[in-house]
Image 1 (cartoon, helix red, strand yellow):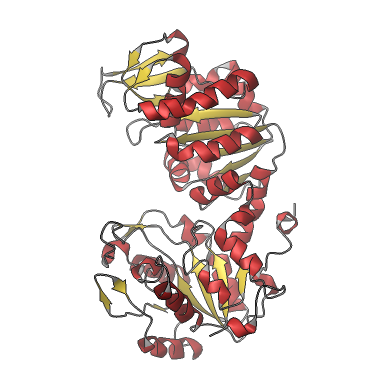
Image 2 (tube, one colour):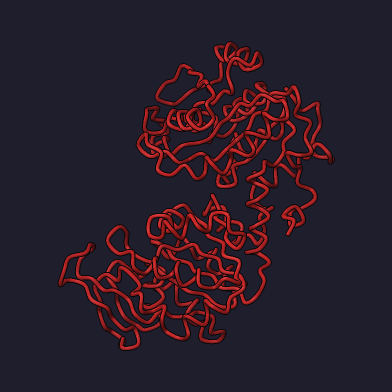
Length: 443
């Protein structure tokens, strides 16, 4: 299948840009650093194709990404320290590419970096002279204007645009409309990078699936998934739930109480329960693991059959799906007969309970006919940790796809289109081949 056929023809693509001799500002989603350490370089590795293409086409790259949440929402202060620095990302790139990248530094206060000042000019001269492979800007969220409103935001977008000739967005996971993902397109011609294209093309298989379509969704809070869960329910043929979402559903359906499930979430789940009584799409996993404590202590957890639940019954914490649930004929049939499977789920309370996720992944893999699409950093990390051999064996398997942005996938599902994501919409609306972009907009 040609993935370009699954892309909106209005979307400007990197392969349509004239890059030779240009400075290219490229926004990645390299948000893989936690407390100064790279948790998993997968998101970085997936963008190397775009970076190589820019250089191969004779252009000079300036890279940028956000890392973590350095801004205190209550005070507005921005904490600038090693915990949210791009330095580990640059070190990783240098070790992989045997090339030198420069991180410019700028004055800052408790409100962050106010501006990109002229001190960056030396690095830009080095870049154009070929003395360095690229410039990697500091964490975009260190800049006051990145998430601000008004003049500070517009000034930051203009400063970014003043660095380059062309803008490339390869940051599918960064779906929020911030200065570096959204406003920048008003001042530079923008194009979708190779990773962004792949994410959008594969997302079309979730939004317009080959049927039967099975989705597996889990989460730590029900209310955060109501929108995407409702949208998914309308699209799927069968739905499997896990985590606190499943616990909430069980409480609402069977009139039981499970520790850690709020009354407000139970009330919110009643609509799904009533709807499923009519449509019958939810495949229940009958065996769950109940625990007296939030942890794994011998003698304090047990397997419970949900078919024995009675109204008014109180359970401890339900922390996992027992593997035998996936041996039940109805569950096996729902998974084995699917032609498209979307997974955004960690089934158990990690790191103590992992058997449910392992059983889920191996059962899904047994279906060799289905297109299997995994979304979400936690989902992917659990897959890699629990089934490392399987993960390595399917990395280049055409029947698997691992999205780099779980939140972006769920947002697109909720909206019903990937092209409603604000940064993607901005690329289309300011398409230099269309009516939206004017060179007079350039600073």
